[in-house]
Amino acid sequence: MGAVDPEKDFVPPSFTVKELRDCIPKHCFERNTLRSFSYIAYDLCGVAALAFCASYIHALPVYLQALAWIAYWVCQGVVCTGLWVIAHECGHGAFSPSRSVNNITGWILHSALLVPYYAWRHTHSQHHKNTANINRDEVFVPRTKSFRGLNDKPSTPSWRLDTVFEESPMYHVAKVVAQSLFGWPLYLYRNASGPKYARGASHFNPKSVLFRSDQVWQIIASDIGLAITALVLAYASFVWSVGAVVRFYGVPYLMVNFWLVSITYLQHSSPRVPHYNDDEWTFLRGALCTIDHDYGWVLNTCLHHINDSHVAHHVFSLMPHYHAVEATKHLKAKLGKYYYHNDTNFLVALYRTMRYCQFVDDTGSVLFYRNTSVPKAE
Image (tube, rainbow, N blue to C red; front, side):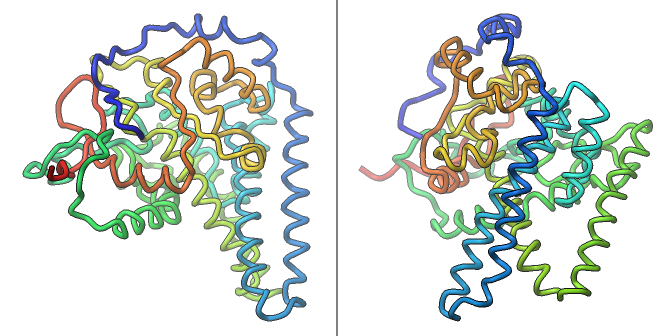
């Protein structure tokens, strides 16, 4: 988030999908069902090993137990987010050439994580088809200045760092925490951060405006999956106690929410990356408005590279994650300045993006984030 003006002389990219596809080795588009299942086995072993270790936390000295639980929650949250990513891959059809294998696997994994698989799959598909379209995208759609009721406030480009905010830093920290922990359930329940046409719509309602009439039974199937998981959790609470379920499942679930929302937010929100109105938007321009983030080898691996190869994923969503890193190298070379990446520390990037990226102007074909800060006094 430097002080370089990304808007000056900006020209939307003019690549074609074929150009980008041709620069990537053909084997990167091949899906291998057995290899995909190996990643599920890898993640499930991690979940089981962590849960097993956590079952002995009570044997530790009291002064170490709190630290041990925090370590478990953080690690289990990361590993379970990896499972979420694999289910996400099923939703795209990138897990296997078989549609049935994709859907059955995705439904089981997402249901276990309290995600309505088919409902999410549909709205996520719309997000991919309309990425960075200010009117039709599905997630983290920038609000306009008038919508936020800020017409009497300054409209400062978000890339400028030499400014002063009215709000305290703790205000933005609180927003990061609230969005990261509760943004995902709010998105599912009332489509928070979604487009204008569907604000308040629920992913659990088969008759929601989010879905077509022929998708009713798929949404019901999603709800059945959630009901089964809820019953399992209720039974576990009866057998082991509510506290045990909260410690072993509930808090890691919140950590999954944190990673899911935070990763997605940073992938699609940046002072350097535009959103488009209908007159300038194309599928590929929107797909390229995605930012890769490197979180280090451990997190990149545990998260199955959803964070550092997301540009490739948006351009070619049928590509499995285990080929996306290689494909990213070729895309980066081809795209040049139109390949966006950010190596800023994860937490710092979250704070800065929340603070500096507040709204976009109400009019314009190419829209960059703005905020209400004012230049520092000389």
